[in-house]
Structure formats: C-alpha cells, structure tokens
Image (cartoon, rainbow over all chains, first blue to last red; front, side):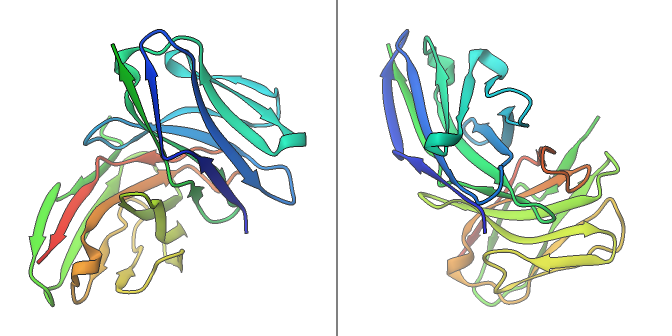
Length: 112
Length: 114
C-alpha cells in the first residue's frame, strides 16, 4: 500500500522567512501526490498536486512543491511566510481505486 | 454551489447511543469517502464508495457502517458510540478514481462521546 510520511509535526518560522514542509512517499509505482491546507476549524483545501507533467508544481498562495524521485520526496516550500499561512498542512497520495491516504500533518506557526 | 455538505457541525453523544452523520454532494461525483481526524494522527480513512451501491472499508472501519443508495448521499452510522470515537469527521468526494483527481472536503462534524 502507498503511504506518505511528513517529517516534523510542528514547524515555526518568522514572517518573511522561508517555509519548508517535508513529505516523503513510499511507492513502487509513480505516485500522484497532493498537498492540502487546513485553516482552524475548517475543512481541507487543495494547495497543489503532482501529476507527472512537471517536477516543480506551483500552487495557490505562493506555495510550490518539487517532486524528486531520487529522494522519494515532495517537499512544500514558500519563499516568504505570511501570518495568514499559519495552518495545518497535509501531504497525501492517491491510492488508485480507493481514496486519498494522508500523512499525519504538519502545523505551521508564523511569528511576527 | 454548495459542494460537500456535512450535518450536523457539532454533536455530543452518550456512550452507547447511535447516530448518523450526513454527507451530501451536489457535484455528481462518483467517489465519496469518510475520514476521521485526531490530533497527531492526520486523517484516517474509515470507509469509501466508488459509486452508488458500492462501499468498502478503509483503515479504521470498526464501529462504523455506511451505505450509498444514491450518488449524492453517503451517510456514516455509529451503531453504539464509544468515547474512542470522539473525533472530527470529514466527508470528501471526487469525480472519479483517477490518480490525479483531487478530493473536495466538507467542513467537518465535531463529535464528542461522553
């Protein structure tokens, strides 16, 4: 079965600093990977998805992620953090024929 | 466009009580699923459905039942609630089972079992 592992349950950055949230996948076949964001007391919203068309994927709100097959990674980055980026972020893989399988999540805190 | 609608938003149950969490989508999506979210555990798949009349178990199905009589609705039933089922429940839908198809989520139901 496919799975994803998010390294670091909590990441803290200062406003304006680089955001790096880590996700590694375990798959014997090319995976289809997603990043979702959850703001407090809300549902999940799609940030971006990897579909094999390009290794660097740009999403909403200035986020992007790079698929690296050699490292089995799909890390999420943003050059400059904003206070409004504070949320929980989930990496997920699409298990064909069933549903998305999620990592345990990373809470991003942004301080001024 | 309502998307995925979950009701109720909040619920308190006593141990042993039963209840149904409702989920409806108006996007004519074939795939629907239920997740529970617990601190430090991420979202774990409870049950999913690939179309009307077809359901299957996910990672944590025990204590939950589902049915899919229509494309639009996918209710989750707790037959005898236990404190371990205290959680936030999310329903999701997607157009199909394609590998690059994202899921659309409801706003969640926060359930407390006392």
